[in-house]
Length: 272
Image (cartoon, rainbow, N blue to C red):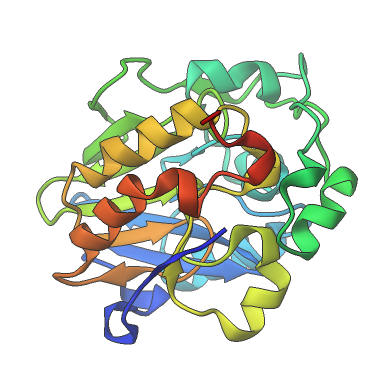
């Protein structure tokens, strides 16, 4: 699998991604905080297991209060790891798309990984990653289920965009005002099959979603095409560095147009 290169000058720091938006990298995954005009804030994703104290300390350093909610892009282990402990500590709800609820209320585990996706250590280790259902039932709330853009009251000014493929209920978040996109795992700015290796070098380049856990490549392709159509100027994914600048929209359009070449593993490519 190839990649779409990103110029170094398009990479921006996690501490100042966009007005009111900060990020925290924990190992190979990012979480984000979104500050609102009334002084409240929202946590986007909850990283890997055992990251509760890291996220809590970061939040206490940057904010005077607990968040109004935790909002999940999806329920994979590296995005929901600390959700239960943080939600209980802060006494806040956890929002997710309704199609993710079966993985978050104790009912169902995610499908087995595609170990033939190739590309790096993360793929080789993928059979060891937790897939068991997480039980957030008493905290779990529902994001809008509309196929296209919908606003969430606890995330004012942001649109919730259903971007399935990596998982059925994967969502991304877009702020039209400054064209900021929080993409979750719809795509990455580092090689998703080699997070551990890439964490050392972190070459800036656009890749598709993590191949070993992506469930539906037709949906994943359509989701990247939908996000490319937003002409986002600022992008912060779940894996890799955030980027901003005039070349970002064209980079995303190239990723969308070359999706099968860049993102889809050989054993999942469409038949010729």
